[in-house]
Length: 231
Image 1 (tube, rainbow, N blue to C red):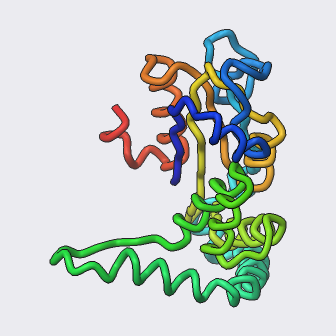
Image 2 (cartoon, rainbow, N blue to C red; image 1 turned 30 degrees about the vertical axis):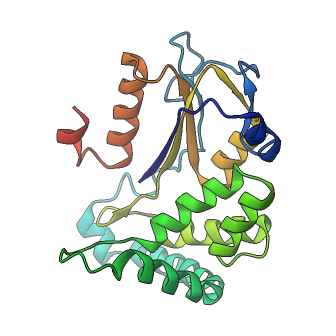
């Protein structure tokens, strides 16, 4: 999973450069308060959430899925998603080479692990919140001609790498954690939820409720596998 935490005040120069991005102005913008499940609430945490995927195989055991017709139905759809993603990834070779050279070539004497996919998704979210030369530099790094092409690629990558079956699960979850004393463009936050499956949460940084929301989001999107770190 990938999450962003924004805590900066921003300068006048930042405001000019990112007017079309996610940042608007201090204490601006009116939003509805929501809990982490999207319901209205008065707890001070405001959220814009992506649509939750339906549990397609909730009534199927692992054994029945592996040896039944539904496995082959799923496999056909999965292969189609992978093929669509592969066609778009042909233009990403330069990005992959550059990332691997920068992150893995350092002679540190230690084993290094890097996920070009996670980094690509994180930078895609960042590009959506930026504008002007900053956005252009990110798009150039990702080998995308414009933001529309980047959205298309990101959607294809997510589709090909999101798996939710009784025998295998892969979840690409993104989130932004934002201060609540700064205004944000609601249309940008909604685009992040719709096109990037990225949730955004606004509240008081370091508060008990904000920390609880982060722990809950992390546990939900890692299947509880990292609870020792989120306690």
